Length: 265
Image 1: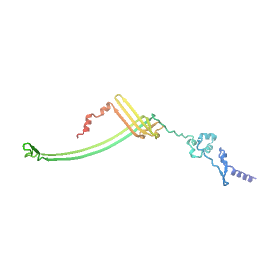
Image 2: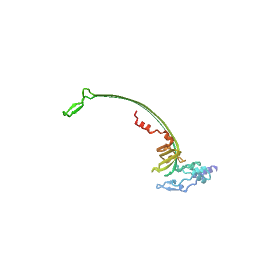
Image 3: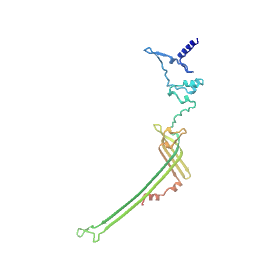
């Protein structure tokens, strides 16, 4: 009798469809349709790509707190899975920053440049000139004829010149500029890039300092704290000028500049 009961239980297990815990059997997937050839073809369930998939919190609520049931109820299509659907601690993807004309952002200026140049020149030039004047025509009005105006002594001209020049020059310059300035979006290109401009003017007594920066940057390069590095700007133009007593004291006068311009030696 026990052997007969075991056979009945085995047959029941083979014919009962496998159902995941907590997942009801869909009547639509169990239906079948008859093909013209007489074969039975099961209908394939269609994934609804238009509707947004439920998140992990909703799946946990539907499965009464069972993580296994929530995982089995999650969509199988990888295109429908989001990080928030499988990870409770997932950070939502930040939305892209949108800036409009006249919006403000911070420019972090970190510019360093180094220039080294050496040159040497050595030249030598010699010239000589030797001339003799033997005849000079002279018109005699009394005889209406040309005569030689040079007498017994023949005039001569002789010149000799030599020029030597040797010069050496060395230039070694290193500049560093660090600043933090607020800039304004003056234009937005059709492709989304931003044209920015920053101006900063500092006046202390008779001293005046003017700082102007212009450039083009991408929206993707702007950090979440609304700042961008100067090294990420295209067509960067930085101008820093000083005026006042200190500048006048270190500036050369017009006489030394005129002498350097003439360069007689």
